[in-house]
Image (cartoon, rainbow, N blue to C red):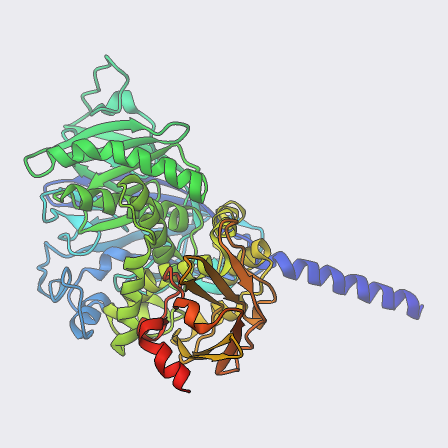
Length: 620
């Protein structure tokens, strides 16, 4: 009897362990059906929303939360106060929200809300709708929420709104009541202060009725192209005339985390096709400030998609739209809003950056608020590589700009760990440089540690294994460990959870009995493997490679590099000495990290110059 009980206990424990390995990777699911009736005179719209929500978590839910982003654009909102009190406010926001009049503010007012046909109690708390459920949603259960709401589109200040600086009528981002994400870390009902987002994978079925002269574009596929026209209809088909001066645009978008649309009566609509890829849509106001460069943009966008698909993984949707609007550049599923009156380089650059978000925000969709660098940083890295390719920039290290951005942060005194929640950085400077520059440099350092031949296939593996699963930082680093055969937890912990810096220097080069002994010193607190390039007077050179002991392995070098691997450097040792077989007098130069792949904060101590140092060396 005891044996049977013990066996049952072990079996139960094993079952629990197996379940525990996968139970945090479930995804909630939601299907939205919305009907929107827009009044372009008052900039208000009435909305009906049906949301079929499935609780795939192991937990029973007693409450749900919706985001009401438009409510941020009201005087004394959290976004307004944050902008007016932070040390370095975003110049696009400043104190503008505090000065909005009643007909300029944004709002989303809930008229009614039902759960499975029965009214529920709710409370609007700033940008969050708190809903007390009549009946808990059990694990595995599906419920239907039906909502009626009214909204006013705010003056365009940040990302969303009406009448942007270039005269675009509507940039409709964060425009509908959106169910908050619930995952293995619980609810993510963060008040909106203008930073990052997190969302449930959703299917959208959206009908938007608006003045018939307006042209729309955004997330999703137009279901009634022949009716709405404006370049969506088949050749030779005349579009419908609508009813009461309005047309209804019908969009569907499968498995996306958000839905954006834009509208303007003066949009020009151009299409292009990526070979073995998505159809591209470009919507912009054609004028003397846009016509030439937007005319060239499709060609570069096609090239960018081809390079990105090949290098980082294939974009899974059949469409992508580049739309003039917003307040700079902002990514959305299957689309982007960008300001359009730019130089060609700037226009291509912002398009490539926002498109690249489709990989790390649109498809992988890490929680941007917690891991903003896994989106902005990885996007910045990929965009720099892509721009170097399609614009033929010829940079040996396309990440040099991102490195400079990180180094400015490291020297500023304002740096905070990248693990800081996006909303809670003390300055916009620290947030921006951490999310974009340091996040991109994170990948640059991994490429340096792993080697290019391993790094790029690993990036594709990461994309393919974790798409549509909201990966976190540990999920990513485990993919890189498996690909490289290296232990990399130390790197992630130093780079993400601390502000410790890399700084190595050449301490001495001494000759004894015809041999040369080189001593390096670790000045910064962050350890890294080192590559020391030694050039000799006879024109030959070699790379002395010093792995870190905690890596438990070595980098993969290209076959044409002459590499000598020496003993591991235990990270606690402040200095390290290795031996060269040649006399010091034969050395022309000796440089730590000659290719500048490492984000060393002080390169002035990285080189040994024979002309300057040999005399003093021999004197010793």
